[in-house]
Length: 78
Image (cartoon, rainbow, N blue to C red; front, side):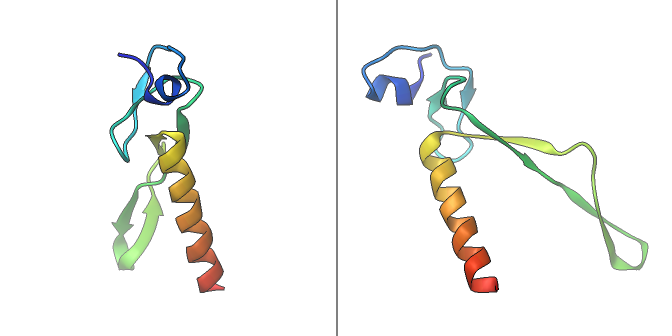
């Protein structure tokens, strides 16, 4: 399978991952890897992060949308 973003740019590169947002195949150049922390609730309703964090793989388009959403959320919260 080839990278969708490379195909749009009239290039060919082997895909190494699938975007969790849209399902497009992406190569190493176009894959954005971010950490996602899972949590568990302990005694007395204390939330604790689970180690190690999981990975989330996104294409450039989905990563840009995720970043824009995070920026809007942080701007309205402050």
